[in-house]
Amino acid sequence: MTMRLLVVVLAMGAAFASPSDAQADWLAPDSNPNALPPLPPPAPSPPPYPRYQPYQPPPPPPPVVEPPPAQALPPAYEYHRRPRPWFRRNEFAVGLQVQGVPSSLRRDSGTMLGFGGLVRFRPIPWFAVEGSLTGYVGRDYYFDRRSETAFGLNGLAYINPQDPFQIYMLLGLGWSWANVSNDTSFQDTSYRYFGGQLGLGVEWRLNQHFAVNGDMRGFLRGRTDPNASLSPEFTDPSTGRTSNTSAGVLFTLGAAVYF
Image 1: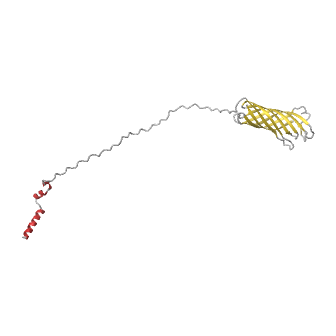
Image 2: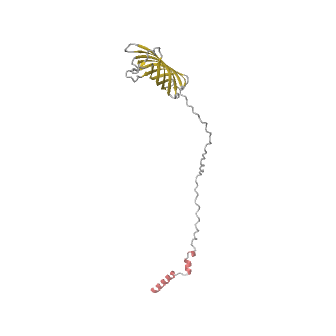
Image 3: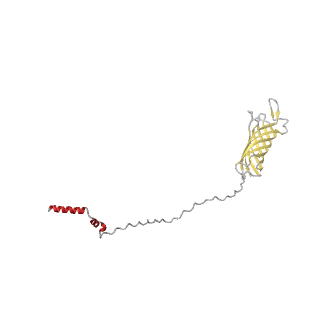
């Protein structure tokens, strides 16, 4: 009994281990009447959703810079120097001046100092006529006391009248009257002179109406009084020669007011 049961079990195992074609068809999924139909193939995915951007207008074109049209140059300006306020015509001035005559090389000679006034007429900026009256006191060549009155008439030629600091040359004539007192003989002697002078100076125009000046003048003169030939003024002790001619240097400082 036991053997029979074992044979049956082995036979069933073999049948299930190698099924027949009918069993294979029965076991196949297609042969299952209750099997579901196969799934359809997946549908293609839709196209991606478009992303819309806000509308932006295109940038404007770059500006085109055009050069300005050529213009004709204005005519050349002719520069004329503006005349100074003192560069005028027909000026009239009055002023004061101080003059000094230094001592000569002689140790015992003196110095004279003068004070006076002047009038000046300047018809054009380059030229002026000046008249002056000056009184001097001091010691003369022989160290005698001397007082002298001089009148001068000069012409002044200005080199640079357009500038405030003006250089001028001076040329003129002069007349003078002197009184000399000798301390030893207590004798007074009178002289008259006539001569000329030549100089160089500067005038500084501080403004339109006021100016200061200074110059150096060399003068040469001779006696014109009746006693000139009878009593010469100068005598050389070594040679005995006599002379009535004198020369020297005169320094002037002055101030004038122009009208």
